[in-house]
Length: 198
Image 1 (cartoon, one colour):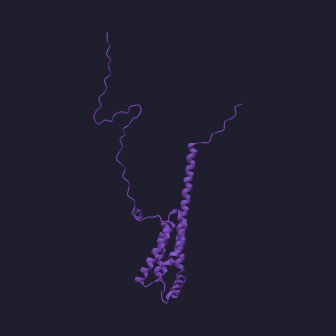
Image 2 (image 1 turned 90 degrees about the vertical axis):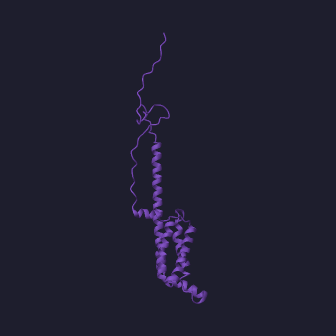
Image 3 (image 1 turned 45 degrees about the horizontal axis):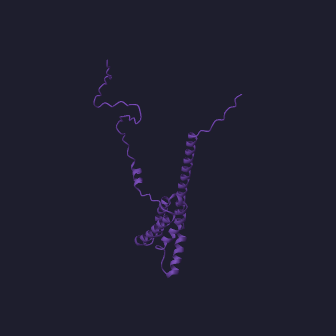
């Protein structure tokens, strides 16, 4: 007498219901997620700071940027304000800050060095030009002597910004080293010494 194989009846799946997960390789679990969480927009000050250009200048690039900026501002001062040394000195301070902020991490030391050179280069457009080459040189030295406060102030601003960036960089690297050491300790815990059996 032949026996026919009979399978137990399977319950029918309703449409729209998730299929239950089956064991084995390549199992895909259908997880229904809720609606995405809406992020709050950043404050306007943060958005404005993100739109500001943030180039990374090399040491030579920061020197060229600072020198070209100061010479252009010196020419502009000559045209608009009649070579006012006070205006030139006031414009020197933000250029120093930008130079120190935009120089790349590897060339941080160059910012306080190129700033006084750029100040002197820009004075060529503002200093007294009467009396030929000798008069131009004397006007340049006179402007340097009388505007030394702006020169020292701009160099100090650049030095402070560079120092803060260097300290932040060193602390960030130290934190990364500590995190890597902690991760390696968790991955490879030290072996406990075996107790001698009596």
